[in-house]
Image (tube, rainbow, N blue to C red; front, side, top):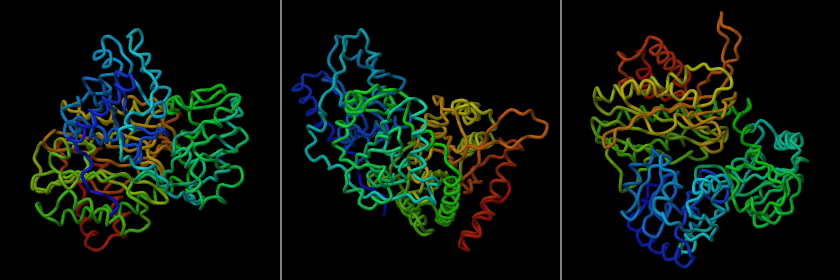
Length: 595
């Protein structure tokens, strides 16, 4: 199996580890140390060697950080993880609601007389440290670079990954890496910039049309790169990874050891483009050229998928829908009490394997029943595994990595007879998802301008959810990809070719959780008869999997919403039914019947 169900969190171990870290603080002459969930490449996902936050505290969420002081250790998490963090960390740690509570304010509260707080300059970006120091102006608190004190006490820390890199073929990339390099280099020359520093693994993968396996579930390899204005690239990556792609990279991509990166950065001259939000402090300090905060040049081109990439995503989602429909038919064929969260996840992985071309799952499957559904990023283990019981809602959030695309889908299913409350909440979540699908909006708007559309039906009932409505998705790359989002805080303008998730939810702690998720592509909206000529965008749907009709309260729906659901289900039936086995095809006919 691709997914492991081992227990990965041990709250009790965090007690001794914090004690040892505090001993290292004293030896280092520090009053505190910051422990992010980050690595030197500043991507969202980290290898086992870089799971410092989880190792120290026991918290295994994908976002958060710890500020460890002599007498208090705060674990900062956002709304997705506030139940999870309480379950995973020992009492010596204090959960802190972030971003409502900012780190600078928290430090001033707990170090009222000032002090010195250390951080590893490889693990924090220039923007993060600038913001923190700004928050601490006139506080008497100093933020100082330090060796990594977690590494100093982590005796059995894993080695860094060194997995083989392979070429991503033109038939799926849609543009050669020579053309990509030339296109981005022209932008550097136009801006008068000599080079750009690239630290994000998925940016390097996209630019050079390569993929790797250094991060679980994400086909990326660790390394650094410098793109020059002449379209050549210096790639800093372990040569042992690159044996299979030498001819693919060609002479204009020069390979160096990763250890040579800082020295070469120090020798760059002229204006050097970089992204303040992701460039590590240590790299910025090494640069003697003029740093220009122009952003990572790969981020926007990567976000706006070309027609070949979009077609690959279409094909991958149709393949994935077959697996999902076979899976949902299997779930409905098994009565309450006969399934567990682990058996559900393993069965789904088996269906994805059976349709062919599965490279990996795109993240650890969230298979959550009953109260576990209220944990948006729940990870089932052998210790937490629940039986799927009558009256439960079963929430399954999953995806696949295919050579032509990345999928991410959530479906919430009724087990037995749902309650009126469950149906009401589900229907409001569904209405929010439909609002996003149907949205037409003027060019120039960002995700924050659309986010309320998904929340409005819940707001009408005094409800909400504590995560964004949608994240960007890569094409056979990271399932979470910036910079585009549908979120209250996203200011990135939506453009054609951007792929996003559409996943509103609702979570009742201790009872149930609901989330419904499709992937969508930003496209030019069709002209409306009699409308003015304003430039409008809309969304094309990628995900074709039924939505549980048993959980829909039709009395809450408008006729337009009923029509959308019926049209969606008819399209699902037409696209997917011919590819299903006989039993699943019969199930799909029933599951997509008109409301």
